[in-house]
Image 1: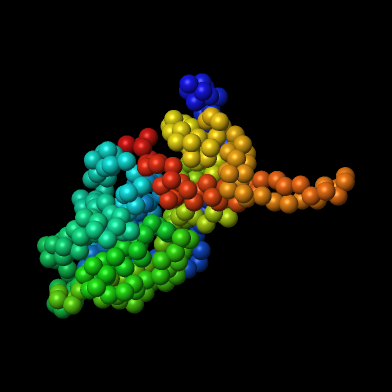
Image 2: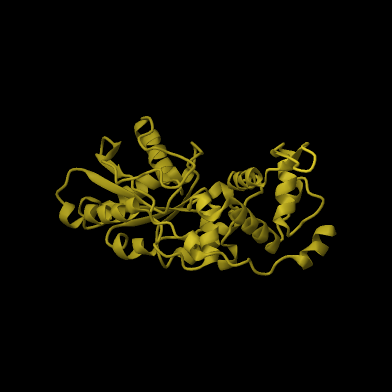
Length: 318
């Protein structure tokens, strides 16, 4: 009952955030996009990878106009294990106008059905296409594209492990921007001879609005420090309250749902012994205070690992 009553005091809008802080387009990304365009002649199929938690927000529009549409295109929505399954049909229906071939994956699951479907589907689409300047080529090549930190390299490694039973070929990390350049060909299959090109994550040069930018930040496609962990955590709290998802109350051991991010972070810090020691200037005694920065990082980590439940951040767009 306390949660329902508290809902009346929740924010209806999130405070303004400087959109420039949501703009992240390092030089290696612009250079990477040009390289990707130059390599199109040697590519037979494009696989675009995106985060299933934001299937509509944050996809780079440049891909649609400069890369996809020319070659067979597969849209992979990764991290499907982090969203409610009931939304999958609606997501497919919403995206059908943009892409006929949509596959949901969880690259951490060695038995993922989506990963198993991907390579045969790519082969089928390539065989049905004209291949243009590559019609006489003996090998096949697939390019992996997508915004940062959506699991492109994980997908390459998962396919390589599954098909060739070979170790990882691409670096994987929790921070966006791990892949810095368009890599040389990674062999995926001996017969037929298939290669993949992993590419750097490319974010659109201008985020359309702060809401999309904050969703991208929440899913770690923008480096946390560029926006600020406390701001991202506050947006998460705002979003959870707005959609009446109060699991965080129990996870963070709060008395009730709240709209005060400082209250949440202080409790997280206390629960996890994330404390800072200060000397009181009046009497010289040491006092301990909650480390709010460490708590914000922990709050985001718990969300990103699924600790607050299965969440689709774009559910209001379906």
